[in-house]
Image 1: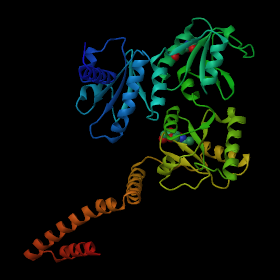
Image 2: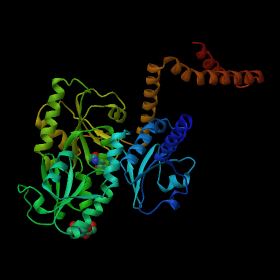
Image 3: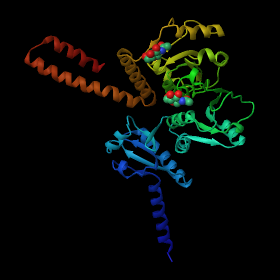
Image 4: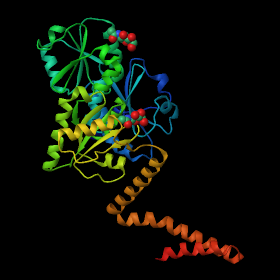
Length: 418
Ligand SMILES: *[C@@H]1O[C@H](CO)[C@@H](O)[C@H](O)[C@H]1NC(C)=O
Ligand SMILES: *[C@@H]1O[C@H](CO)[C@@H](O)[C@H](O)[C@H]1NC(C)=O
């Protein structure tokens, strides 16, 4: 029999060994030791990265929850600065990077770093890329859970092969199912089988290779609802579809009457003129404006309409008030025919301006949050520079050369005492 003390010790040891087994530390040997059928969810971090540290408790919870669910997903982490071979293999460019490795494919997670969202990603990506819906109940359940879903209907075919291949790559972004014809409700009209049907916006669309082009590109273009709430992660992801994003920027809370009107107007035009615009535009509304402020390098006054080109960080603003449907059409058409100029962009000048803007923003927020620290951070380099210049002047003045230079130095050192 164990006495009390040693049983406590034993349980502590057990706990400790459990804790460490939730998340495995991976090094460069991973690529040799992993099994071909293993699925891994890996966090790449750098020791100095504070966002990585913030993620630690979440990562531990994810590890423990997946273990207790009996999930086949292994959870790991790797110091990308030490295990550069592995980081190179996974093309890690920033920290923390969250990547799922499955059947030799790598799926990069780019959403919010919360447990719920990462778990959702993990369940979706680790399972089969195409899940089969065997009953009407399952179909309805899937419909209730997903805003957007792609369903293959019919027997095995070349289209199914294309669908599965597309799903394998795009499972990070959206949901893929297959079903027999008699599983879908009768009201869904399918003129021929096999078919790929997209359900979103309370309706459905059938894919046609002739009209829509390559299946994978069509899925990538159509994977967002026609009009939805957009955060900066979604906005970024929308850039990959190559479409312009047409936005209403709103207050975060307490929408004023005008905001409500703008939002309704945008939603209506997006729905009623889907055929006209959906090839070129995604639509939505945004309540957090930091990303757009950064893009425009100024504080945007809300509510407003703005169209963003994420391929080149450019943006378009309406040239007058947008109060009617006609005004909004004029704005969108003006962008397409080139009569409304694109502002911003990502050329060198814009990038430098953005750098200056971001620095100013950082410093001013620092001053607001920690005035003393901000003051020291700013004044410290100035003091050092002044002392340096002062010493340099003295040396030069002593040698009796270059009077102009010492004048300049003095004005600089004088500034310090101001
Ligand atoms: C499947 O994809 C290939 C290559 O993109 C294409 O040529 C073919 O027409 C597609 N087949 C169907 C049925 O969509
Ligand atoms: C958006 O940016 C891309 C990349 O620079 C460019 O090719 C495209 O024409 C732009 N679209 C519009 C409508 O300006």
